[in-house]
Length: 107
Image (cartoon, rainbow, N blue to C red; front, side, top):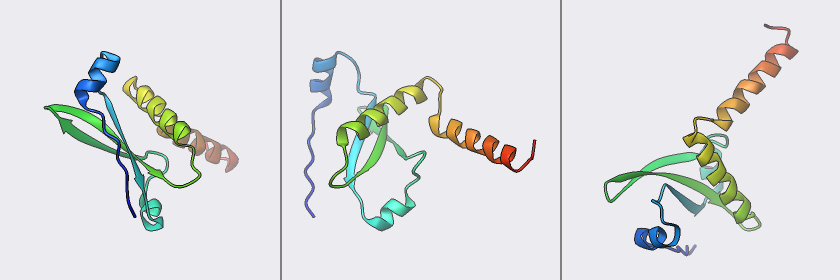
């Protein structure tokens, strides 16, 4: 399988947007076995050190037929919320636990 990677230098990004790079999104084709290991709620977060700056890297699985624009937009929005202290997956888990305990009659 061949992979194509598009890269833009940090300097080019700075010139384009006038701000520092704060997120790396890696689009990666994944085998079924890799997809089964991936945490669907929290995703795959790593830290990349570029020029002595720690930058969060998110790895998104891609496959034919997936809408990359939506995947990227959701990843960016989720990252922006996390930097403001809101963790959507944690909120979802807590809400599900509350609903389960209400249905089972537990306080």
